[in-house]
Image 1: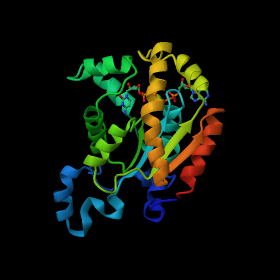
Image 2: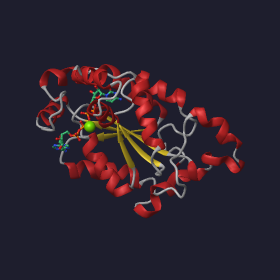
Image 3: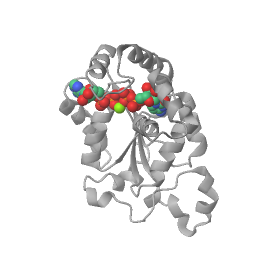
Length: 237
Ligand SMILES: Nc1ncnc2c1ncn2[C@@H]1O[C@H](COP(=O)(O)OP(=O)(O)O)[C@@H](O)[C@H]1O
Ligand SMILES: Nc1ccn([C@@H]2O[C@H](COP(=O)(O)OP(=O)(O)O)[C@@H](O)[C@H]2O)c(=O)n1
Ligand SMILES: [Mg+2]
């Protein structure tokens, strides 16, 4: 069940100071770098010390992904990459894809994988940390397959957290989120729930079949949910 628990356990210390990579660059997990990496004596980035520890955080809109990610960062020292936040930043920066991203998000649809993966890749490469919480990705089988196509072996998720929450609870939370998001309205939420059911549940099933999925009851208080999350991460120490 606990894939590679022994070789990764050193990365899950609760002490923040031990979580920084000794190197001055982020882990290079992408296939385009494989030749360079394989030429390095002693295994280069893919020695045990350089292999990233990846956690995907999944769940419907309002299931509590972002909230729990902040707490995981504080306690376990991960770098949090929210696919939604990265996409929203492109909108505010008026980037090349900004208008397309805004239109897609406003409709509750999914942005093309190459756009999202490029942003995630850039964020990973610009951090020194080896431990990543990737929140809201992969959202579709297309996202997942595109990611698998371009990452190196060893960058598959070690853990996939799934916050399981009844739709009525998620809707209530989203509609009272109050962050001024263009997609936090009842019509778009209905679309997002549809997308979650038809596109994200197959991804969740995929990771369940691979034995890396941890389904967490997403109801109750933030503290109660975080206790359930801690049970997963503490088992890796
Ligand atoms: N356990 C909880 N109980 C009540 N409200 C919550 C809980 N967890 C998160 N929230 C609130 O619900 C909203 C959605 O949470 P968020 O973490 O942004 O979810 P997601 O990232 O999955 O959409 C936020 O306003 C957040 O403060
Ligand atoms: N992998 C992803 C993640 C988000 N998105 C878009 O960004 C929106 C907001 O995602 P989010 O993860 O911030 O939303 P929450 O589930 O946190 O409420 C989604 O509804 C999609 O439109 C995407 O297209 N692809
Ligand atoms: Mg979120």
